[in-house]
Length: 458
Image (cartoon, rainbow, N blue to C red; front, side, top):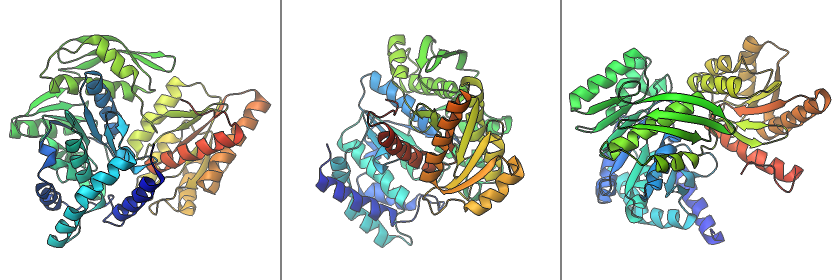
């Protein structure tokens, strides 16, 4: 239980970190994080690490890797970003977010070194660099047997890239953060390939041909061993099941059958395939206990990723924030759910490919409610309305600027629709990670107000 004093200190720490250079801006240098890590005694080199990059699927894949390692009996540290509801989620130890007390103690260990590096650098340490350093220290202090690090943006210049990973994982690469990573897939892939370390193992998910060439060339340059989905490992079978899917995966060393994954979507089966191969590679390409593998995947969850957060009506939140993610979401909803009508609440960021996101959602959105999350980067609702009406027409589009009102009214409309038409109308909340996180919180409060027993899914 977190004490009131720890929560007060935690709020102070979060505000101090947020006052730094925002994580949505990238300066192509590792100088500050390298200096900071060196001043701290290079804690990130005191334990083995696994590194993940890609455009979509990084966080879920890292959670799967974490579950597999934990089930193997290892003490795990997992660093992911961004968070949904609390920044403590970014630093997880043994699959659980770091405690408020743990964060306070870690920050106290690091704070003076942040000031030191600030004083020696042209620009102060950024938010993301600071919280990355906090993860380095937290995992060393625990201590962990393995650190799992998800890249924040790109790879080559990402603050996490001062680790020396034994295994690098690259999930499917698409278009995102083009202002920093490049305007072509080749440029983006080149930046992301920067996490592949000399003489390491590179686990490569299915990629476009031009991307695969870049990644393979990087492996040749640094003498890394590539393991490719569809060649060295692959998904052999996928069947829909109640609450998820059943998988058969051909790993690097053997075939693993009867794996129940309690997540929706073909893309999640691909993430599971990549995660399993990564853990096999980390274990030295040794066979894993099939029962352990099944137990680990059965325990996987992925908050904010096609997550059912309410029943009657069904409410789903998803963090899709680019066309690639929105397309995967649309395919999952179309293929694995049977809704009569879907009301989509969308609140995207203004610096994303919003037209691409809306186009991807068009096949499943019977009605679309436009709104705004609390981020200063949120797209102005008026601008969003113009784009949406060009894609959906006027009749399917409505505007409710406040996200809490948009969600509440959409749920009530879905309930009314189901009562009158005896249908199965659902609400989908999406557009960004911030929207998914705020949506989860709003729906929780709504559930407690409507039903004190709480209809939130366990």
